[in-house]
Amino acid sequence: MNPVSIREAKAKFSAIVEAARNGETTTVTNHGHPVAVIAPCKEEEGREERPSRPDLPSFEQALLSLPHDLDF
Image (tube, rainbow, N blue to C red; front, side, top):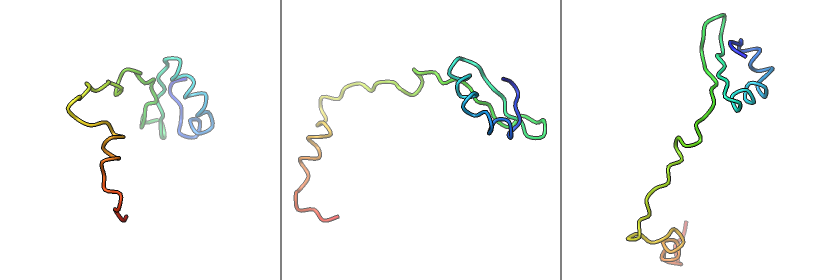
C-alpha cells in the first residue's frame, strides 16, 4: 500500500494502520509529493524500564507524605 494520496489515506486509514501493524510502510503524498510516512513502531523503542531507585520513596509514599490540609 505504497504510496497513497491524502484523500486515499483518509478513506483507508484503518487498512493503512493494519498494514503498519504487519510491518509495511506507507508513504502519504500530496499532489504526488511525499509528505508523510506511516511506519510500524518498534515495541522496544521508548519503553525502556528505568532502573529502580531504592533511595526514593514510591509514588504512593510521596503522596501520603503531603500535608493533608493543602488547598488547591
